[in-house]
Length: 180
Ligand code: IMP
Ligand code: MG
Image (cartoon, rainbow, N blue to C red; front, side, top):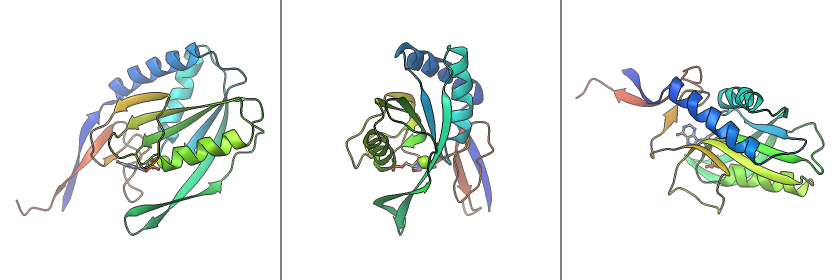
């Protein structure tokens, strides 16, 4: 069985969008900005976005938060737990949560509530992709790279069964089992 990955957003398109997102974020004039990278899927996006933020004149501190949703078969049960927590104090600070995909919204809603409960002054969210029509909880991202069609995407940090994170573009896996 061979698998081809069809390009959905190429590296050049993503880089251009990252620069626009960074300008939008800078325009909100964050103070004592703490960028929190929600692992693992957003690590490539975050690395590029953070450098775009520098070009836009910002100097955020960076932290990493790893969350996991319990799986019930292939469907997320909705319970989120902290796998790796941040180390900085967030009291009174402006926080930017960076994630790969906003789908059900459970992960980002959990992270947003967590940081707000710890006393952040402002919590904004930035996602590379938003899949509309899949939301289980009411949350929108403040900054969205692309409205993504309802495909399972990989690459640019995102995986299926731990594969494809290294691809420099966002793509869709095509399954060709040789039967057609
Ligand atoms: P949710 O918004 O809590 O449902 O969580 C979205 C998370 O599910 C993302 O951060 C990804 O880690 C994962 N995810 C959702 N859709 C995809 C996809 O198409 N490819 C890879 N990961 C995905
Ligand atoms: Mg994720």
